Amino acid sequence: MYSLKRKLHRNLLITVTLAMTVLLTVLHIGIQQLTESYVVSRLQHDADSIIAALALKPDGEWSLQDERMSTVYQRVRSGHYYLVSVNRQLIRSRSLFDIEIKVPELKLGESHCAVIGYSESERWLACAQTIEKQGNQISIWVAEDISPLQQEQRQFMLFGLASVAVAILVLLLAQYQILQKGFSQLDQIRELIRQMRLGEKDIALQELPSEIEPLVGEINRLLEQLGQRVKRSRNALGNLAHALKQPLQRLHSQLETMTPEQRGQGNEILADIHSVVDRELKRARIVGVVTPGRQTQLDEDLVHLLKIIHSIYPDKSIVTDCPAHLVLPHDRDDVLELLGNLLDNACKFAQKQVLIRFEVLNQGWHILVEDDGEGVSQEELEIITDRGVRLDESIQGHGLGLSISQDIVASYSGSLSFDRSDLGGLKADVFLPNPKL
Picture 1 (spheres, one colour):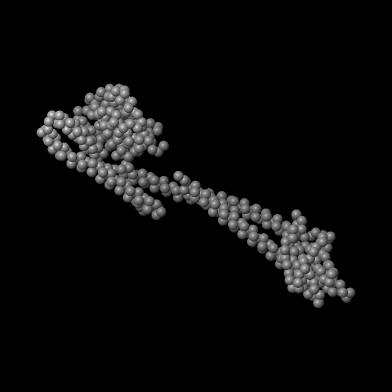
Picture 2 (cartoon, helix red, strand yellow):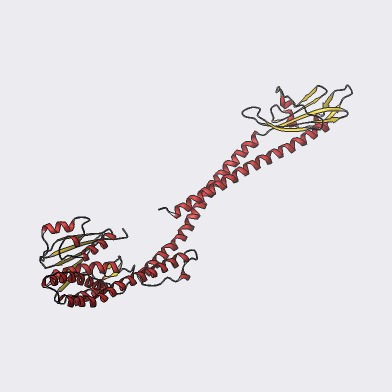
């Protein structure tokens, strides 16, 4: 089983992180290209100034008019450099000092820009072009140290990275609040389903989010279908038991015409069949109206059950010890069948009195059913409590009802054990754990 909320958090974190990473990458590339474009345009402007300042002297040499050049080229290692090559004459900026520069050979009209890693602390963006002036082919090379700009870029990207991290954190916190608010509606839906399960109210679909409505509709249909199936099943068992009554009476009459030996064997078989029929009729009467999923309200349901047991065993006294307003969060039909089988077995073998007691524990509920009958021997008692042994195959007289009770208790991960009662008969000890723990 996985947590949907945790999965949504993880998916959002991955999605936002990837989106922010792509955004930062695009931003970094964009800023880098924008910076280089700006520097290239400035270098082109400087190259135009150099071209305009170039003058041919009467002696055939070329010179640059200093008053038309920026003073930044006059400071050594200023970060701005130029080199002009014309007719094997080199005109260097003072900023180059003793730095040797190899100007790329370009054809007339060609230009080229590239980043040069001059040193660990300097990176130059250099542009070269070849022009013609006064019939002479001139190569012009200009460069600018862009390492300060790149440092500014790195600081900006670090700031952007920190901003993205804060933005991701804020988004995650906002999403957490949104999910908390959204999933809180599921608690309301769970409470509505619990009330529906207990039969307290039906779920109004207009109270639910549209995304949950199909799920609740399916739950409603499933409960309704389950109730109909259980009702049909138990009605069929009751009808079958009633239908068998008349053929069994006719068969009993036929036995009167047989020999005493045959009549004795037939009566034993008929007694077993009558026992099964009576048991199914008792189960139908004990459970009453089928309400699958409903919790057991003992103030109401136990009174109904005891009336039925009294009608079956009017000569037996049943003493109850039950806390007021006790509710067992287990299926009402299962609990009534469990208590009905235990009380039926106790009343069957009791002399006069049966005791049923309920105790509320921290981990669940403790139910004791005792009778003042003859009880069972220690050897038979050990067989009853053996794990996996069906009770109807263990003790003569303690029939299928106790085996059904054991199955019901096991379905709730509880325990059912038997011991000798202080009243003299058998004591059934049931523990039903709290399903919420």
